[in-house]
Figure 1 (cartoon, helix red, strand yellow):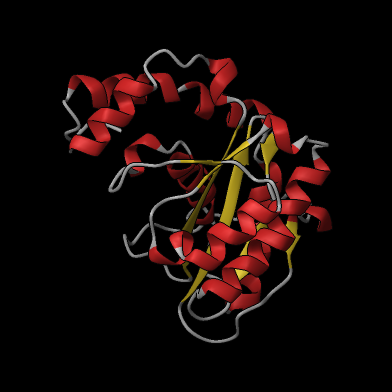
Figure 2: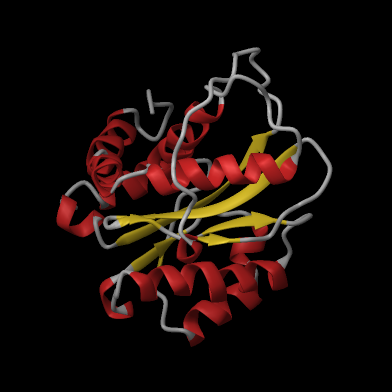
Length: 215
């Protein structure tokens, strides 16, 4: 709680202009079969543009693990994670999805700050060295703080439409295709609205002395 409180106090004065420089990142799991019993409803949308998705299809199993990032300008590249993440695999994500996101939106490295949580894979010496060598500034993030990260709400935006199909996907390939469609449909305005919530998140953690918040 102390680290959360100190982080919130240190960033109380940050404005939207400060937070719009952050590239927020995170991992999430998407189940092939919804765990809450909701029905699936068919919707039509265009296929995700190739520049936004790494086509890595995991065959079999009941879920897909994703890595994604959120910028002020829109969603970044999305990676489907095969198996467990180790340092080498994570470096591959940074080299591919993160760097392509930076290039696609024509961002300058000196103008951005990368956010990641404190998972051991993210904080390994090999990762820190790669980020340093590639001139990527990292936002020091407090532990146990998903409520501070607006990308958590982006995952909700991604998952809700997946429960609106009339039937569950036949397999992982079909699930990935649906994920593609939804990810492509997320607008810049939605992304900006999420990032604009960050000062309120900071204030909520500060007011809670680092404790639990509604986010």
